[in-house]
Image (tube, rainbow, N blue to C red):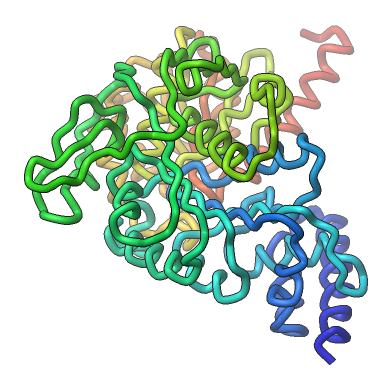
Length: 452
């Protein structure tokens, strides 16, 4: 009976995915939700059919990029994989990923499963499947109304990890929150980190910089941003663990490159210091599961940037779309902008839908003051007027306001800027991308007609 229900669930799910695509939607969660109503055991039946490893990527920032980098390494090494590439990272999205890959009668030909999982959902998802590798990218304050303080998120992740006691943890050793797992659970672990001072712009954010074991404020030999760096506690023996995979000789311009473990040069097409951690995490996983990749630079060269991860469009001038959803993410996006020598216009788009987080008080934890020297500024999204006020407190007075970030971006193209950055939170990104693609296509047709 279970197999019959699974077969029906697979057929319905696949039909819903096709219907959703015809209607222009992502169809990344709803088909899985309905499939689980038809066959609640669908994941439990499909997950054990993965031949090699189930790899799960958790953490506040960088999950989608890290997850999709790992998936790229898996497929480039000749393996097949289940992967939720568009970032649907709760139970329904995981179900959609598995069922969309399955055969019509519930067969599954996949060597690996590479799954991004929401931090709060991991303890639920791990009731349905057992990971072999768990990546924790970082832990920052995010969506306070949903997650609470990061110590609460940490406790939720510990509950999840304890459901997979044999899983290897791949941890960001520069983050005290992630590194604490080396002392609080018995799982085997692999550490990645940046092993030198990189002179990143420093912020005043102090979250996560108190020792989780004795309560003392952590000290640093050097730090990169937020609580990430070479930390140690003077009150107990807690300190940054020695990384198994480390980066040195870091270069951020024109794109990211570094020396892996002091030996292998790795070049990427990625922008931003934060992507250094995503690259390190994905390499650590590839080495841990023995994917036998000999040239990471070659594979990174073909890696396609995910939606709104410093994604560039050309409309007479470049327009760059980037997702930022919390203080750490925005501050790293701002640091990337500061490394761009061109004259910049910037639009910040803020929505307050449930998947964004309805509490936007965190805007005052972002260093928008560092962008006061941009040639033009915009405030967009449902909370555009709140963002305009935030710009005012950043000593920016001439701010353009419109709920639509793309409309604003097109307006700011008319200034003497050389590039426009659109920094938006989650529920704005997909509509913004659609509009930018449409505008880019129209601009291309205008060029062909010789009108520009």
